[in-house]
Length: 116
Image (cartoon, rainbow, N blue to C red; front, side):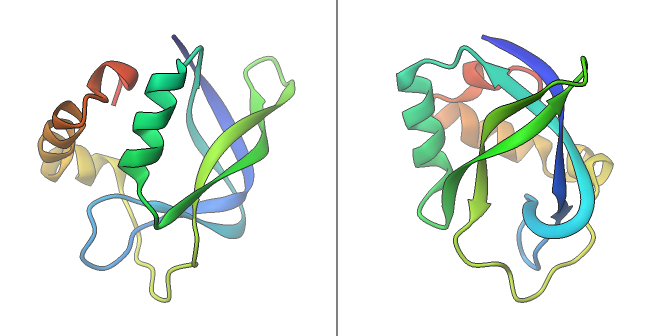
């Protein structure tokens, strides 16, 4: 599996009241994230199960370091959140990261997401 940086245009990463993780919403912004390539069928199934029924997979164009645009699977909320709040990666690392990694490990996903 290989990870590289990618940019998704037309979306913003936001928080939701009572949730430690972010979600994506339509916006006139760009979101930076990790593009994981070479994921096995088993890993993909586990990721889908982890995301749950609240999210759907969409294939959207992302831009990579070379400037090329390629299709990527992205998880989007089935229903846009009614209320959003600012979300901070730094705050998440300080407060919620350890709990998130425990959940990934319990679901067998930790090896699929090495650089969280």
